[in-house]
Length: 303
Image 1: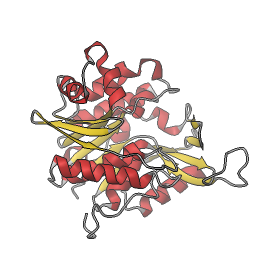
Image 2 (image 1 turned 120 degrees about the vertical axis):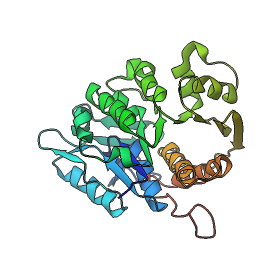
Image 3 (image 1 turned 90 degrees about the horizontal axis):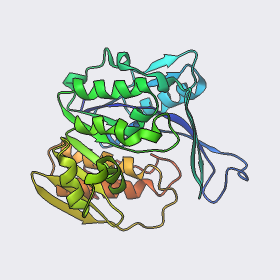
Image 4 (image 1 turned 120 degrees about the horizontal axis):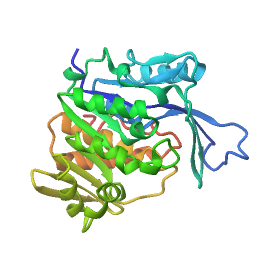
């Protein structure tokens, strides 16, 4: 079978209080799963694409739950390894504060290039990895590079620069090799500025052109008031309105899924931007990273 996309990255068990509650006062927490790459996989699977998620999970109940949930979405997980000694990672969402991760000794933190050994990477139409994979350990970093180097389809990277991880203090240096090996870069404006360093000047379109010098042929820049894309030397942008969000976590992954779905199907950049914005807005309406993701990209029931 030819897959539309293969993604590599850690997924954690996610705990969050119900809307309007806090971790301290809630009588019960909502149990979910979350991970940048698998969030995007959920979105793509709901839109009808054939996707694979590769990672490592603990041989524990949390890992069982994640595999059940992703499998129920139609995501292929046969190449996920189970670790009898290291646990599945955990994250706790604290409204108004942020997210706390418990992943430093997780099963995914030691995923290496051998994790990809039997996966049909060269035959996939696209691959996805984010900077989180580059930052959780030296072995996952090497695995991310191996994924991009083995790919023959569209190579997609979201820098996803995060603090508090193994490589966060040198995150730009660790993620930059991913950017240099990708075709499609999906990044926040501040992430591009950080990766470019002294070369980061000007407006969003200028940043995209500077990022193109690193190797990507298509660059999406998510700004505060607009999202734009540079491809073939042409810059296109769309204004965005940020409404009342129950939880903004996961919106970037949802945008990525909408954008990638359109582009893998041969759609225009303008349509991809519109789809990404709609998907990102839909996900912010709930505390889950994925529950609000739509199953269509327009009101006519078509993907």
